[in-house]
Length: 392
Ligand SMILES: C[S@@+](CC[C@H](N)C(=O)[O-])C[C@H]1O[C@@H](n2cnc3c(N)ncnc32)[C@H](O)[C@@H]1O
Image (cartoon, rainbow, N blue to C red):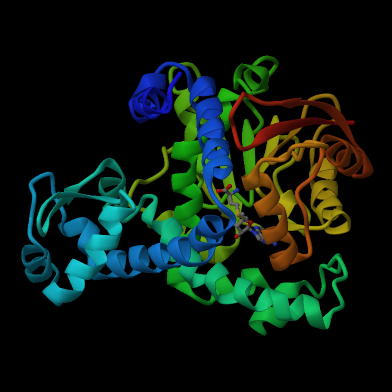
């Protein structure tokens, strides 16, 4: 194929081509990323990494704060229109919109005329993906730039002490969880980021069918306890999946008081069979003999010794031969980790001196807590898997 035909066939590829084949979409995306990296010269790559992406990110944050995404519509508007809608300066709006358009975040219809693209429309939803931008500026943007100095000073030793994770030096605060607890908007952005991520990553119930829990379920017990369940995104999926057959099954979301408070006041309330409860997962689990205890993105926040303590509480509360422990989290392949998984591993190191785990490490963790490792459930392209264990 000549180069003109290659370019023309590449420019015709879009997400809609893969509407019914998620796995092919994920593969195509991987290939597209690899293609870009093969085409770029080293300077083009440094430019993108060190200037283009960070300054686009700053521009997106400022634009979200100014209300530009909410002011845009399907109809083209001038930067003056957008400035008067948002009560801001037209000249400033022009400059930010220029970069947003150049990065295909918004559409440039004509000279100084802008409208929504699918992405900017998504960014206009205050409960949606825009929280990922706010979360970045609440947290990683503050601590990550200080990490090079931290590692220089600590002589490049792998952090493993959960009592003194890099976070403490980077942010001078007692713990990540105490820091966000005392800052309602940081907490809200963080929880909404996690909740809206589900839209992208899919529901855990797609990997692990609730029928595994319903088979042999004793309705006198709780069907599922979501330990450290945040805003209850996972139990919302469970309740929806079993609505027709088990709408009264008892489902519980536990978390710290500050999170339960946000959860109680969320715009989209949880179904009525979901109970909210304050519980510290290092203490005795009050719900005994549930059919399942689920923890999503919990174990990766803690190094093995601490994660084991949390799991031991579930092993003690569960009923032997009946209760399951389901861990929804990442799994690092022995080779060829995805950029997201590898990035998450570094982030967990900075925040908690914790890490993402390989299948072998998951097995060791689960067995070390006295549980039986059953298997890992996954679907292609999903970011998380479900590690299934049972109470012995
Ligand atoms: C990464 S978030 C995951 C939230 C939720 N499982 C999800 O995936 O959306 C970790 C959660 O653990 C909670 N958490 C942290 N320490 C806790 C503790 N000691 N007891 C109970 N929950 C805790 C946090 O409040 C937060 O909601």
